[in-house]
Image 1: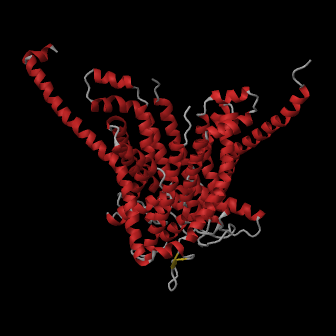
Image 2: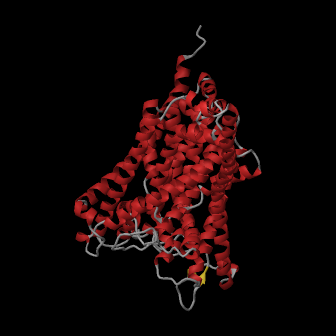
Length: 314
Length: 292
């Protein structure tokens, strides 16, 4: 220390420090800008998605009328002579699968979340919750394999008319896939209901079941509904399970035992074939993707709206 | 005289208690259903796939003959994908998290960025595939290369890393920052030397979760047009390649039973990779997590 001092005056040392500090301040100024740019990437991604979908969809609608897209009841893009682009069969396929998934996932997911939040001991919760996390983390292609090689053969034993590719099996498996999501999000909502409310009801002589049904469920309703809406959104966008197990025949009917095609599965089918760049079929996947995007966006907005608007404050 | 009629109490309470017990068991059954499904799933995959799983399976190229086919190119492809996704998504995700937690003021732009991130997390993965197809594969002429797939996947997992990193940064106590300022450190010095090291376990855990999402995802890669059959390894990030989920998808969609067994063996490899990643995450969380 003393040695360093020897050559220079204190004044020189201060000015030296200031010099390096000035370099520091320029860094201090650049960094927030750089970080803002990284934050802008996520916004650019959204803009990129929207612009991509809009531009390619416009190219699609140069060749196919919006009226045909929205009202025609046949989706036959591969027919050379009578190509028909009506989105309804694909939407009905998606809704069939999603509906079955919700019928499976909502009762099981809600029951599991009530058990975890109202009945389970801390130890049971610590064991069960990670298992649900594992279920939620399994890649969807694995569920697809499970649907095709296990659930479908199992269902065929009970339902004689069931085809190899059908809406039922992927619907059930998507339901299994989104169950952990409903269970864990709903459990979060129920756990945040204050204990004082439970204790008040218990003191009035309620059973635990009555507390769960008449106090906790209504109080946590916004969170529960939001979790279900988010699960619907996941089910609509699910791709690999339906691509593997649901078949590739777009049909507009109420039949769930036969082969169907969802919006996502159609995009996969076209991506895998040798469809030329710039053809109507090529642009059609963007129009279908746009429809899919709008559906899921709507669901996400509803979920956010419900959880914000109807949240009970304690 | 008795104020409480025992018989009356019992007669009204009994059905209510019974209902409570019945529903308790029903709720428990529903919870155990998840356990049951996981058990069946793992049993099915192991019983079908273990027969094909050996060193030769890991070292062989894909083949039309099931007994010779392997996952070598797909496994190495998945590692390549991770090597591209990890640095890009980590850089962008942590950068965004630092900006939002440390620099952003509460204004319209910040709120917009936050809403945008939570909406991005809800966009189906296949739509990211369409974005990647237009922007990376076509407009930037990257083709179905490692880089095109890696960039697409980085954007897909970005929200996961951002959310995890924000939580980790927020959990660093204010006192640490103030002590650093008190010693004369600038804001950036405080962030890089105090906040980030303290937040690293949380950030890494989130990054590993994001990576496991990236290597398990199939749909966007199908849309990008990744080939189902690749007989060579990529040498640079501009080469075409395939990944484990694509290979599994390829084998699953064939009608022959032998290929289904191969798919099961491929799934075992994929799940082992995921378990490995998650074990590392748990290890990091337990070893480096500090309590303040």
